[in-house]
Length: 363
Ligand code: NAD
Ligand code: TYD
Image (cartoon, rainbow, N blue to C red; front, side, top):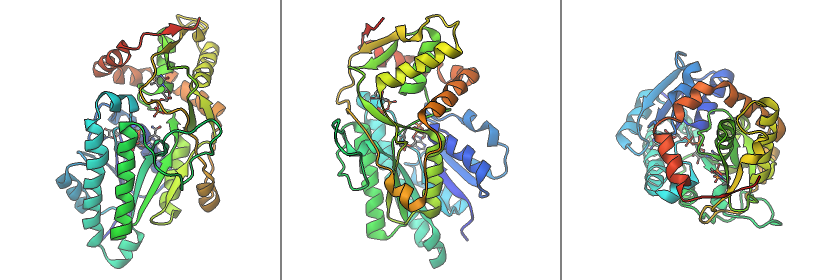
């Protein structure tokens, strides 16, 4: 018998942990979190729910079919919400292997085990089961300044090893619906920001560097555009798609908030000037440094979120102004979390990543 449980993969990462915390507050059903705990996974994110009897953690790799199969047999979930991935573009450029192994091989393993599990369910259970695959807008490639935003019909044109691996996984999910009728849902979301984001990504990296008086490394001319969404809004969208989305469909999720990287970094600097006037370097914007560009750096991403808004009545709640304030407050109040994730391996990564990117400071 299938239970009311959902199986979340990658629930110890940035979006996955926000999703589980939100789920435990707003939904009744139990959650099983299957996570390998790579550098990006941190069980501390889930301390608030770790003692809740509805929450179970399973330490394991999605590419290990035995573990995935056991997890499905033991917990009998009604849905899989698949976040687990290698997620950082710069890391995919320095070493793509793990991206292919987890994002392509891991998703394949999960699909195969999900198909076997789903096939053995009763007809009614098969009907209500869902495999929700969380993906990115980066699969659509790069837009010019006047191009229309990505819709669900935009052709795939991934440009980085990360986006290519996510595109491959999206295609596998599509094929499992088309060929085997596995009831899949795919979401393609824009850049997230918010609590628990690992400080290798733009927004937390800039907050932490600015506070410490370290340079703020902006790639190239800083005019690349991303469409930013607050992580809580993304999690709500995923819950909405899981509850109401039509099997076999894809839904684009975005915040209607296109900004250049320089605009983002300047906003962070202005808010930190206000909140932390005693930091080592004031104004914080004096730390902005233009460094060597990322190879193959996509110029612009923008999401057309009309489909999910029209069909499922989901809308983002946060504006960038409200979301970025919340995010900065969270990082200011969670020093311990930051210290923990920025020890050892993190420092080695930062040194390797920025060593060859000497730059020009603006001030
Ligand atoms: P993250 O890197 O913060 O977390 C990834 C999580 O997956 C970690 O907990 C890690 O331990 C786990 N994981 C990695 N490999 C695994 C494996 N082989 N088996 C089991 N667990 C494994 O990533 P995130 O930013 O939270 O992104 C989550 C998902 O959302 C990804 O699929 C990503 O492609 C997608 N996405 C992210 C963004 C964004 O802006 N961060 C935007 C759109 C879509
Ligand atoms: P990132 O957070 O890595 O997300 P993605 O590449 O998946 O969009 O980067 C967001 C943007 O910020 C991207 O255009 C690259 C840029 N960036 C910098 O300019 N400097 C940095 O140190 C980082 C990490 C990113």
